[in-house]
Length: 404
Image (cartoon, rainbow, N blue to C red; front, side, top):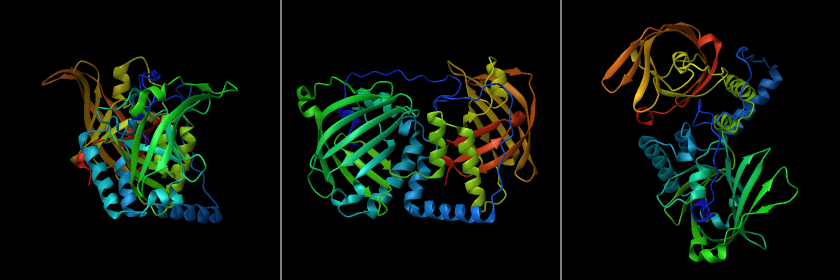
């Protein structure tokens, strides 16, 4: 991006996380503890044909190499802020492959670069500014970049959208094109636009006094032929991945992060994938982080952990499964068990070996949980399922080192 690392020093904002489901903020949860079974509506033949055409259209928007990058981003939280070293390596490999393909030859001279781009990922240099550290890593905020180089007043703007109800912060920069890849910029104004106020609230940043700190450059190292994905590198060594159009998994994760209607988003997502002719699903091995469920957590954290309402779910070969929850000060809750195929897209799960673990030591806990795990959607990166007491779950895979 025209970098957030260069703009608005000193700004502090304390995001409100729900302690039970960080780092993906659950801003809107269903009330009560009654679980309703998710209904998937059957479509008419004509509707199915339309949906299938939409699937083909959405898939065609990205090349194989672009889809590899998008897949690498699935499961990374905070737009890279919480990424593990293997996840970062996977993204960097995908980025370099696209950069080697070149894309649009002169991106700054192409109309495809114009418009609003959503920031999907950024690296985290030690020189990152307070605004970048505060806003970019918060999944409940949406971050955009607007690029308009063909107007009488060429500008590049960074936008942090807090929510539809609250409003946004817009940081603007005067821009000029140096060559076919590089944009020069100088920040000159910033303002909050709150939905509850009829006027903008200027943020008093002394851009003129910042001198060279308010200036920088941005190289576009890849711009897709479709104009849907862009990779840029900033003057402070930061890499940015931005998209004009997102794919279905990204939109579902965005709905979860932004506190939208997750049930409806899941319904639409599953229906879309059913129309794409998905066959029987298999439980994929790996470490899966629970990011959303239809069940309110109780005051008993150990009960939540035993139900899989928090932490990770580790699927291993030979039918082994483990729930793992970080408590604090190095203590973890661990509960192991077995799973076995029981029907179409279903598995019987028995969890019966629980303990509070600290290093090599553990305190056993007498607990047992049995339930049927039903897979509604499953790939190498994201899983939607029903688990204990028919609770609906969304998990993302976080062990990039084991993914092929």
